[in-house]
Each structure stands twice: as structure tokens, then as C-alpha cells.
Image (cartoon, rainbow, N blue to C red):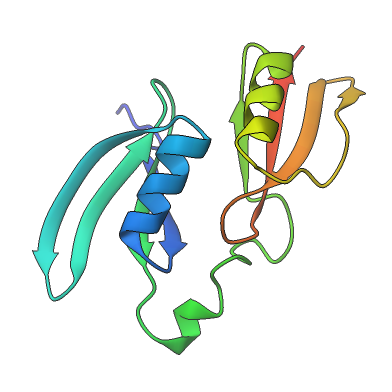
Length: 127
């Protein structure tokens, strides 16, 4: 049996604002945007390789409070790059907020940044 992790559900306030942020700020591409009725859409975004994000509009107060805290304050996702310096500079120029200066760890160069809702991510260039 062959299996792989294909996508992760990612809570958003609004599909269009999230699509715009991920495509313009992080350079992700919109893979699919299919209306499902009743203000729901099947929206997939991602990079040229790797796991996709399935944008999911929060449905009700319980899900709305989880936006921006989807991993309880821990780093939620890891954006891997082959050129940390290039991508870090691009992200700063795009207005992305970093929690820290880049640091060199045994596993690679890394810095934590925040997405449009405040979820922490790692930008990482592995060794």
C-alpha cells in the first residue's frame, strides 16, 4: 500500500483574503477553488512540491476562536527553502513579521514568522 500526506486543513476567516496573502506574500499558487454552495469552497493552495493547505472558512464561534492559534501557540507549519537569505529578504519586503532574527541550528538556518492570522511558522533551510 502506498500512502502520503496530501493536505492539511487550515482555518481562515475569509477565503479571498487568505488566497491573496498566501499567493502574494509567500508565493504559493492557487491549485483549486471550487464553489460548494452555502458560502463554502474547496480551496487548495501550495508550493510546487509538498503538502497542500486546504483553506477552510471557520464555521461558528468554536472554530473562529481557533483561527491564529491552530497549534496552541507552537509553530504550526514549516516552510522549507533552498535559499534562506533570498526568501527571508523577500518575506521582510512583503511585510511579513518575524518573531526573531535568523539563527543557525544543527538542523539548518531558521526563523519563526507569523501568517496573516498570527500562527507561527518556521522558515527553514535544512543543512
